[in-house]
Length: 525
Image 1 (cartoon, one colour):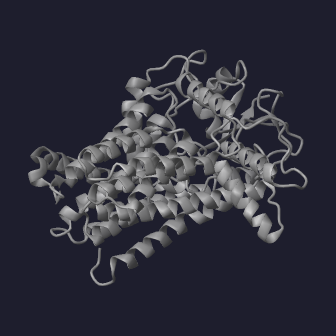
Image 2 (tube, rainbow, N blue to C red):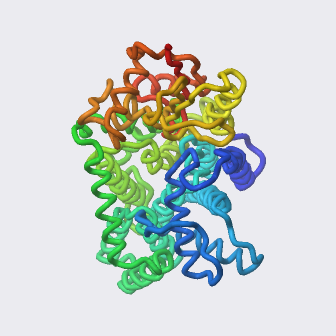
Image 3 (tube, rainbow, N blue to C red):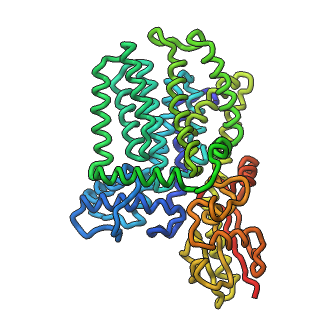
């Protein structure tokens, strides 16, 4: 980090960098109608938002849903309150596309706040201002975080809440303050309301009990924390009936634990999650984080003699225990479920960025050029990753189809191809096609994916959400090139320039769940 301007100047630049990588994603996936975005889960949260909005709005109902939402509602409720506030000010009722855009903007707001939280965590944990600013830059340039910061999904906010709770805990370890208690309670409430994540609650509760037993906080802090938690949770979930909460929890538990009938996730998840973290931010940051972790273990092993003392206690050691306990428990949950998706590595990325910044702080005296080099590499890594959202392979495919295929041809498509701007198509399994368009977002489940890694999955037992009978076998035959009456005519592939992503692709397919190759097959007549 260059000498001269204050660290707050560099923090502002980090925030601008974060915006530059995330804002263009608001306008991608241009057919923003129900179930017709490239990331179909966005529709679930618009469903929640419009349901709550309609509870508040006295005019004609928004949306055409006949069933109740089934997913966790905290994020959708926040969208609804924001949309309703805008309606009261402007008189405008958002369309479906308007709710999608609003949700994406909220995700970016959460990501920008997370960059600030990462900077604050760096400072309170002992990093000097330049090192904390480096952590903020790395968080801003983290590709996997950037992706989920421009989707209409709770993923970005959920990560913010988890680390806000961690920041509150760190502040309470340093000095018992009401602000630390507020951040802890708000972060815990957000994690519960956005993702049913009880782990920040468990670790935050243990921390408060420990501090109370050590007489480092007054006992009334615990009662105050419970009161704040109740208020914040009520704000997020008011209007969501208890029987519906229980039903949602049961549904999600079933989906996450029995998504793939036969698998070895206790083996696979030990591999795919570290690989996902590495390929989510780049090798330099990952390697620096591993280096910093090894140094942290040595500090921990020396006990409080090697730690910064606060009120007679080893702050560094206690903070490490608190953060490591929470993150380890988050990993254990992910290890235990059979539906590994790349968005689930996001919870580890702020910690990786903070560790990498600590590693750089240990090396920058000998290699003053290293922080700038690592930040630049990480930014370019994210720029290429995000460009594949901005220039999705499906856009190029549409233009090619319009000019290169016969007008009278029968064209079939898999899910997630996106039909806007495409001539009339039929579903892949419903027609005797001349040309078939498959997108990796859908066919990855039958080939290489994070959920079914290391070889072709068995169609009967190893495919997540397998779809209609016979579809798996047909798609595998096309992808393997063993279907005698069809051939691959054209492949549209995302840009891959970095070895981390190329290596990841060889085992697990394209990194992002809802991006990837678009393949056009021709039937031999």
